[in-house]
Length: 189
Image (cartoon, rainbow, N blue to C red; front, side, top):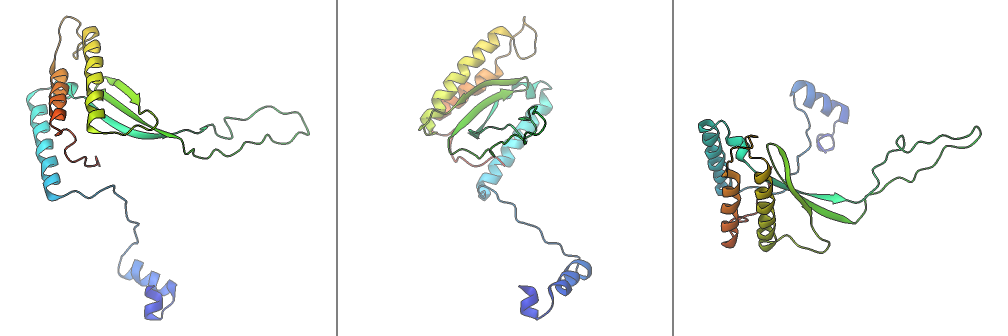
């Protein structure tokens, strides 16, 4: 475009841009959403609260339970090399149909703490993620955490138990009744 508008060769424009002006061409990075100023300020305040809590208590990070969701496509992930097989002399190479991503997909929701995965589940076909869905899931997560807590407390010492994660999840459940857990459904970037 620049070359055409200036009636110059593409090579000359490229040399001027890169060597003389020290410019480089970068592709834009796609982001799911842009955040409002209020959302950015809320994230900063939340981060500062977490940093302060971590500074006060060295075991604080062990009390955090977080979750994520991801779409899983159904397809055969085996590569050509993984599907290799022994053949007789004179026989051709075995053929493998290139795996294409299936239109069948399901959402995986997983919750974990500093020790690993606590709870995971797949969204049922045709289901929608709503506030009511998350409320029910938080109940299942809390139940799973209580079972895990009975077996092994957070510090790994069977004689001592900490209840901070359970309290935090209970707090989220109480908020979901008033629909503040999913208040803005902003992306985690």
